[in-house]
Length: 361
Image (cartoon, rainbow, N blue to C red; front, side, top):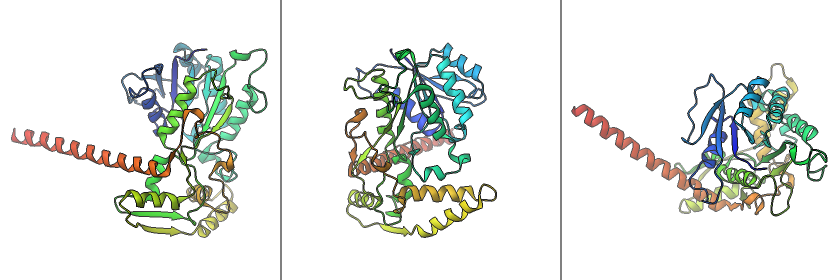
């Protein structure tokens, strides 16, 4: 069961763009098979792929016939769901999953990525904000089976003919969360709570590598480890024990200089969450509620759930990923910022030169 055609839904988002860029990258090993990549997008949305080898593919996610026809006509083998939470209502997920099945898709990659759906704090999030991802997973298990309960997760009669599913839970994206709390240019950091609550944040490049591993090893895996019809909990950075460790890595990377640190107690945030939850759906401040729950899920010592509750199984060689140290991750991130600034400076200089020539006429 060979994979040739890979489609990404939500291609214009941060994750979708990164995954497509990685899969089309010339930096992949020469022996890596080249997939034909499709970027799914709504017909009314203008879209330009991040790489010329990626084919834009318009479709209607709300129309079973349109989506099924799009997937069938392009012979899509893998459907990677990166759509935003607003599209993860149970009826919408059912429509997409059913269309994939009807179109003969071989592998469905579920739209989970960041959150541990079994996280008690995540379950308190408003459905309007985070969608119904938990119910979506239940539907996948009900329809396609689970490796936990069905051995290989396959129907005995249909076996390999049945579409498989997989999900990766990797915690918040390292690349996007660091700037929220750490600023190397000003040497300032914001730390919530005591800074010791274990956290799992994963670089986008690590997540992309894990997904590539899954695609390359479909449908079998030489290690004989079950890959399909299950959730993979991914640790992209090993040894993180909290925000204090990340701060220490930043201070070491910036010449040993001590940073200015603002420490914020979580008591007030916890009170805001409890107050908004008591209001019910009517009249509550959903933005304040989601912000508070997100901070508690990551940094709340009482909640203590940001490390997947000890469920991490991959990151020490699993899915082809070996997690880097927090020091290495910080160093790479700072280096990326420096390169970005250099490119920006070069582009501004070139723009000034062009404008100078125009003015000189």
